Image (tube, rainbow, N blue to C red; front, side, top):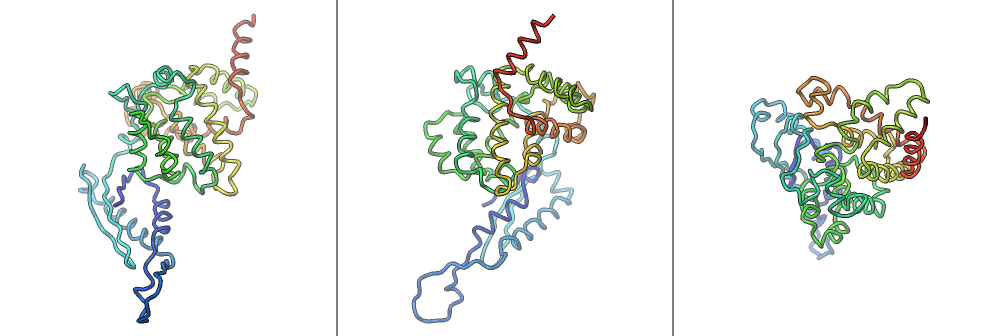
Length: 326
């Protein structure tokens, strides 16, 4: 069974996953009466063709006003070459999918302010961020499309529940879980922060700083903005930044360039909360906000990804120099 959320799915990645499993028993086509060891043989391009049919049906449903307006899951089945795909789907408006919603349960980590989590854990960087990064670097850094290809939604939700409940089995789950689900869990954590990692307060300043044409002025502004971040935010952002750089170093293998990673993570780390967005831009639609600023959000993260290594200690030393300069 494949659960598909149309606003959140990477259609091409599903094709790749289907292709890995589209095998049929060759003995079904063997007319010999002699018993033989079963041999699994993949029909050429079955996954791509099968997902082509799924995608075609999805797009037809998406154009159906009644389906789009419905809040219920729509069930369907598509078969090809003995392979059957059962899937359910529903459509969520972009306004809802972009909305940051604080968690009512403050004992977890998803939807909880980052300073609350680090204080509770007595750590500088949230445990979930450290563990997901470690697992990706251990066995996912060579994975084609890492952070771009979507993980299975049920796996991501299982990891989310495990981190929220602080289960003792989390390390075992991480070692057994598909690496794309772990990458998806990390993205989901940042996406569900009640306030973006780079904060609502500095959002407009980041948008203005990245638009500066003078390189020296831009450098001063962008570094000053990092120094202005709360310590938990900055100490989480810097290791994430270095991790993404290491992922990009494997671009010939994983096909993920700095720009690709900035495109994936930029809006996730910068997209402001709904209230702050409306106040800053005097608009109420999250879709309008997304269209207005998404490219600038990508450019902000790309700037830091292309920058030489940034040290927390060096940033803080510079803060001291600025504060004592007369």
